[in-house]
Length: 510
Image (cartoon, rainbow, N blue to C red; front, side):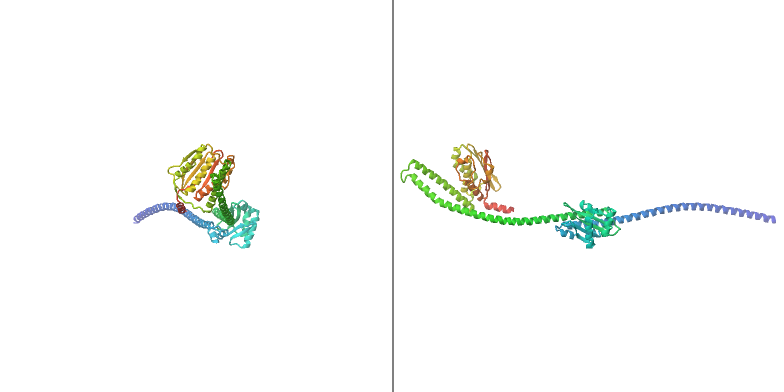
């Protein structure tokens, strides 16, 4: 019984041992698995921590980038605001030519938009002392002290003499301390106002805040503004000079106009007196000349008895010279009447070619007598002229007669061409020519060119003056070109349309 019991106990213990060992084995297996899991979890945790650290770094980087972008955006917004303010300021000061108005428009609000809290604008007066033109934020005493110090202190001479700007970003420690002691501005720009004549003043831009130091962009902004102020100031001074010069010129013109008006009045009076005198004298001379010519003709006819040949010869000379005097008197009267407007020009349509050919026929005996070749070049499409035919004939007869006188054995050429509303005529010869000094006086009354040929040719010096008066009475022009011993050409114009048509077209153009 005991042995059976003992055997059972042994078996039980054996089973229990096996169970325990199995349980221990299971526990060991489970423990090993748990250790592996813990190891895996630790590895995962390390990886997770590393990822978290990376995410943290990236978050910090993103935050830093965002801050920098916000700062850059704020700076950009500030610059855009400043640029807009600079544009408006430049436009404001460039649209006035008044010095005072230029500086008045540099007000505090505009300067603040440019990014500056305080501003001083100083310009030199005639004694080269700096005077305040704009002040925002400083007392007059402070400005006067500042102006006195910087204009005389050698450390600031580069600003005035060389035109170099000075800022807290580039200034030496001594210069910064000097500015701070004078104005209390740790951030500043001192920019010269430049013109072609040099530095005329300075503009001080300042900020009390330490948060935003002066940057390169601030310096560039200040430089642009001061350059614009300098240009506007210079434009205002130039305008003032021009305005004053114009005022002085207008006064001189008015004074000169008065003088010329008085002189013209005197000339007109003298001309009128001369015309009246010439007219009176001519009429007075005509009567005795008519009597002399009449008596000479009676004596030459033999009605009062037979006249000896020598007496008859003298009477012929009296008659000839009487004709010359009558012609002279007629020319004087005609010039006087034309000048005073007492001769009425009867404008009619005249074919230029037929008129010149008729004149040529009249003068042909003289032309042949001197072996002169006459050339007439009048194109068929030459417009008719509107003029007084009688006066036109006198013009061509005078000019052709002159050409015949001064062209021995030569050639005379008459040409015509269209010239807008006029016809341009030219009477050209290859005769003796005229000295250049004589040309300006050629149309003066009683003026005769001094040469050997003229000593043997009689004349009164009134023919060309009469020609000029007739042409100008027709609203034409006459001028002469000549070369000594080569020849002379008279150029003159006559209207190819009625005068009222020409005036109407000129008014339409205006």
